[in-house]
Image (cartoon, rainbow, N blue to C red; front, side, top):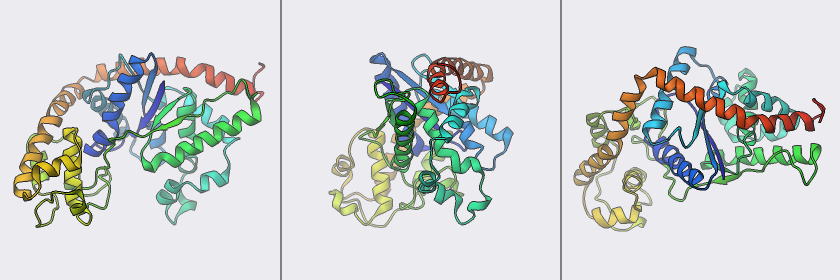
Length: 339
């Protein structure tokens, strides 16, 4: 079992990142470690430069994200935790795969269309080629499992297409260069929506800080954001069907269930018939008890710059070593070095 996943180091990580991705990293790390496999988690700083960015801010955010991941339970002794920029094989393999990837494939990427909008000509080449770097990220380590949300499934399918075409064009059937990675979609992966609009995902880029619970928020701030979260005047129903047209209420119930490790129906069994005046304080208490220790550990870690640099340096060294055989095989298969 070889798990590979990356997370953008831009912006402050929030509750949606924790429940939807980071918590599952910890679970996968433990599963891979117990089975004798490996778990590679990287900060996608090379991806970040595909969009306008502030260099100093990117560097600071990268260190802050390392502190966040470790505070949430990612263990550098069990996982390989690193940033892309310290592992040049990612960029090298991306270029080698550019000859296999097809313009038509990249043009169909919905995230490219969303991010580029109507000004496609004004976007960076890096933004267009972003999915090829994502393919390199996972193929480099012969990943077997890649945690993905719904919005990333298309990119993993592209990685599989690139791997399959490369193997068909340049490798023998009994000795493929790349493993075709499978998506890992956790059963309980919660889709966490904005606290201000239940139809939009919780996002780092939302201009309203009240739309999200940041993992760096203190207890009072968390409680205040839950208190002011958008709801409706009706009490909570006893059955899930009663939440069908109530996106904000459904979001809060889903968050509560994810924090508690139960189901939304179990939450309704407990609070059905109650108003938000009772539900929100209980939710704030649960949130603070879950995220409080993470925040305290984060605050402690982020001040220890030396320790964070050491984690990244050690992880990058391990990643470079693990990546070397695959990159060498790709060079050989393409005829760039003698086999």
